[in-house]
Length: 177
Image (cartoon, rainbow, N blue to C red; front, top):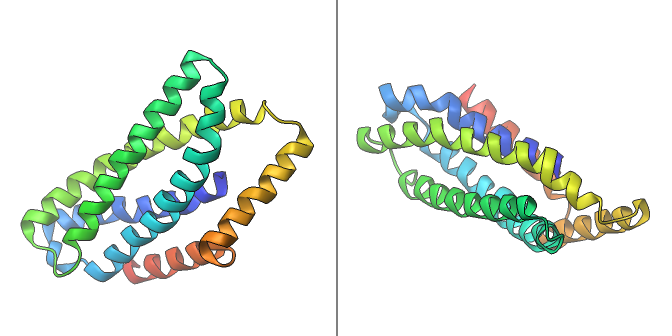
C-alpha cells in the first residue's frame, strides 16, 4: 500500500511542478501528458488503490474496531477520496485539448491545494490507519492478506500494476523534463 502511495505522490509532484507554468503560460503545458497523469491517477490511485484496496479491505476493518477516532479517520479519508475523484474528473475534462488561461488558473489552484490534502491524507494512512489495521491480524494472516491484495492487483491490471504505473510516471516526468 505504501509503495503505491509513491506512484500517487509522483503524479502529484507533476501537478505541483506545473502549477507556476499553468499560471504564466498555460498553452505551453502539454495537455496530453497532463491528461495521461490524471488517467493514471484515476486508474491506479482511485479505482484500484482507493476503491479496491482501502475502501473494500482496510476501512471496513478499521470501522469494525469500534474506536471513534479510527472511524473518524476512515470517514474523513473516504470523503477525501471522493473529493480527489471530483478533482481528477475536472483535470481529465480540461486536458482534452490546449489549456487556456481560464483553465490554467484553475488548474494551478488545484495543483497547489490537492497535493497538500493528499500529503495529509497519506500521512494519516501510513502512520495511523494502516498500523491500526495491521493489529487485527497475525503475521501469517498479513502474509495471506498481502497475497490477496496482489491477486486483486493482477486481476485489475492483468499483471503487476505497480510496475506499469511506475513506468508510466517515468515517461510523464520525462515529457516535462
